[in-house]
Length: 180
Image (tube, rainbow, N blue to C red; front, side, top):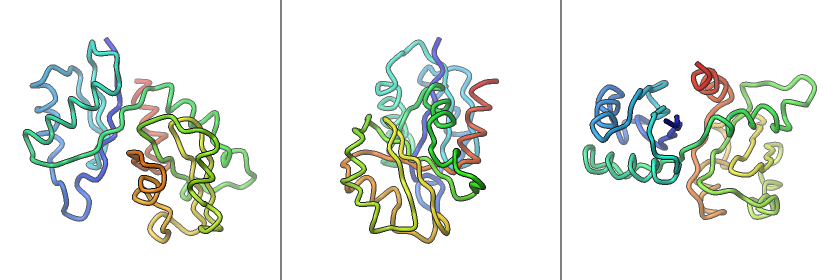
């Protein structure tokens, strides 16, 4: 049995793609996932399954959400190892006096090359900063996520990927839940 973390993008935000977590949980159990757990209302869902493939799990979840709720919701599935690497490889955690309220992680549907940072043209968003590590982009916002154009939509457009962003507090709590 494998535990997968599915990160659903854009649900229950500003009245769009609304779904109750109890209904989402029941839906996932109905298609065979076990030990379904949600965190917050923003689409963080842990599922246990015999299926090893993260992409297959993501496709199953995306397909069922569309069938049951009628929402086209991008899903990025990550493993516990991905979250552990956030703590090991986040360059902004190594800085003196870093502020975790300004740290975010964009989880990407595919592994990126280090050179992909050039495609993001991050210099035009200074003083915001970013660093790529496989299927993650570590972000440090100078002011905050709500006051920048360097967001999930921009990342998806520039890199032609599916992305979903979580704040550092959520990343920390998701790893804690994975470890329970």
